[in-house]
Length: 165
Image 1 (tube, rainbow, N blue to C red):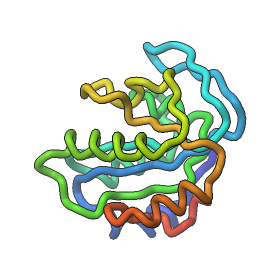
Image 2: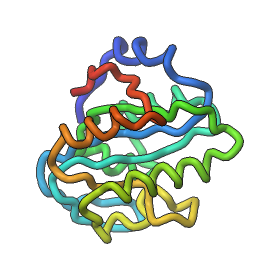
Image 3: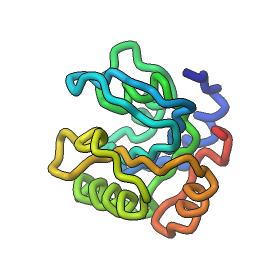
């Protein structure tokens, strides 16, 4: 797990609203078998993953949580972050505070529909509190393709200024 400087937090704090939907781009450098809480051991191929999350309040605190290794993992993403490198943080442009759960699932579905590979082991990961197929999406090994797609999405904006890559 890499360490992040206070500089990164200082750079993003003014770009983060109180609540909203966020997207993490994560890279797993090799095939891995990871313990994912009650789901048990899950095989993950090397490559890039997108994780869609939400915070009803204190979005900056949630992002800080994802920047460090939690001492006691709580969410599926916490277990995954123990091995994966964070490569980018994106936020939705619109304020969706009234219906965050629906917007979170809609974004995950949109991103999943553009992914060329669907991994059955990702079903329900990151989405145990809703009915959608999951908020973890595997996007293969081509970072340029992911970055290009996300940069063209007018509903997303990158907030880490490339400091993570």
